[in-house]
Length: 107
Image 1 (cartoon, rainbow, N blue to C red):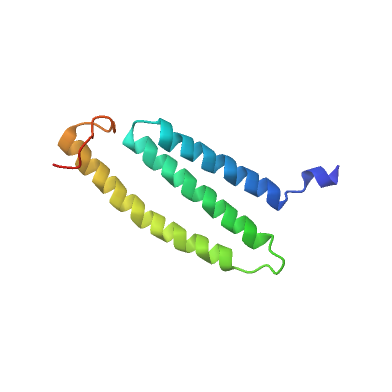
Image 2: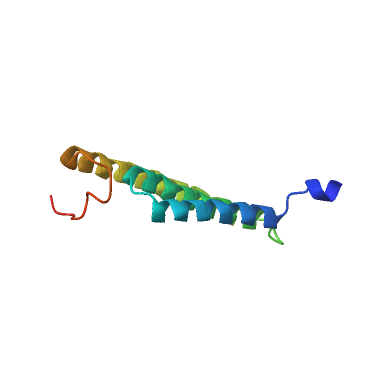
């Protein structure tokens, strides 16, 4: 009974894979640029979860995976700021967030 309650590396990797798959499906299937952006962030966080899990369950536990996650979170914060600024600018120009209406990158 106690073995069923133990969370292993496989549990984390399966969860990470599920989150990544949901994010990938959202990017492939959705038409709103905001939803696509959120799905990209979900995929990034799935990768972060896998890195932390590998770091925690390594034969010689260290903080390399945690440090990589902090670096990724920092880069993701900058990416969010730039990405949202671009989306807001695009919405102000075209009055839509649907990617089917955004067929050209010309202003």
